[in-house]
Figure 1 (cartoon, rainbow, N blue to C red):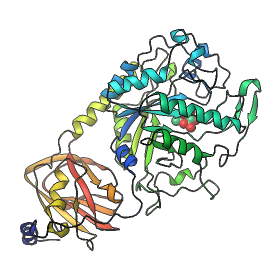
Figure 2 (figure 1 turned 135 degrees about the vertical axis):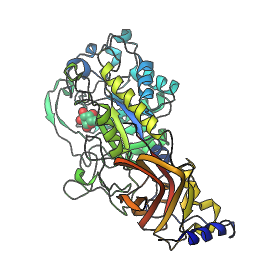
Figure 3 (figure 1 turned 90 degrees about the vertical axis):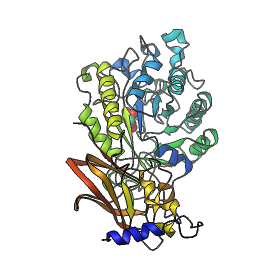
Figure 4 (figure 1 turned 30 degrees about the vertical axis):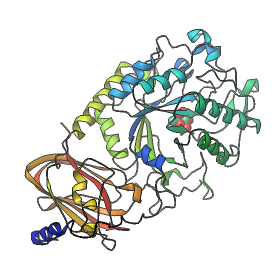
Length: 485
Ligand code: FUL
């Protein structure tokens, strides 16, 4: 531990050294620019909406009459307003679920809104929602189920072209897309154009994913691609909305049989934790529904997750370096049900008020080591509310600490730490002390680590200790917050 004198000596010398101190060399697998942009989104919505909403099912067979899709009061702006009130940064729509019904007037099949009497066959859910998202400054993403229980060619090589044509329509006709979502459910029985049979496919080879992802890259280079195995964002391994602890941003997925992994074929038990020192930056997205099911069902109106349940999920997803993808399914009117909207708004309000004020913002900051004693890497960067500036140490220093000295005691119950992930995931372990005793310890930090304390702590002296790191740490933010009771 450092004496106050050592700290002051270190501080006095700051800025005295040469101005051209180099930033730390990156460590390990690194995020791409599109992944870095995605990391800043943290919380966004899933919209499960299709014929299932009207048939009360979770998986349609593919033989549903398109006319069933007929929301009586669909209002894309009202939906986006609710997502915005909840604090979401974007929305991903099930443009086509397993039943094959397309929510846009595709040229690839008759099984779409074009053959529904909704809006006289002139409706386009994808258009209305993508445009409303833009109006509300929300990003828009697409879910296109690979498994298609309606299409006659599903299971044959020809279907891959159909799937790609559908992707092309979605990625060229609806503005910027932030995420393309491929689920892992694959093959089985269906209508299949009247054949009504069971079709199995080889999950590893049938879809020829590499070439489909090339197409996505060429049409929407800024979009991240999600599946069980990335290539940009990984499934977290459960549909209950939380990541592991530790949760590493890097991951080398392995197939269920120990071989090559592919969408629908991954050792899901490992996806929540990821792989320390893994060869790919592949951060987790935690998907979960605000209700028991993914689609709206009348009987579940009373089973909407509460504010407290949503808060708990937030701490275990966003707070572990992943994102939270919360499903809020529109009902038969084409609106969010009042109970869902109410819970979501309460949650958004709680997150906003919790993180509105960093109680450490006015602390005096003293670090045991500052890289090259250079201001650019000063520990004050931890408090500037900017995740693009950071505190770092000299290369050989892989354990270091920062003391935050507050003018008067503050009371807090949440701690937030962020690494400067553009330089990789560097920290292996950290601890936080208040009034001289340890109040929290953890391992992975990554883009965001939230620690929710069991009870309020009041202190004026706080210490952040990086106790182990694979390379000199680069930490961008430190915050103390008070979640209201
Ligand atoms: C899964 C699907 O089978 C579920 O119906 C839901 O869409 C979920 C998000 O992904 O793979």
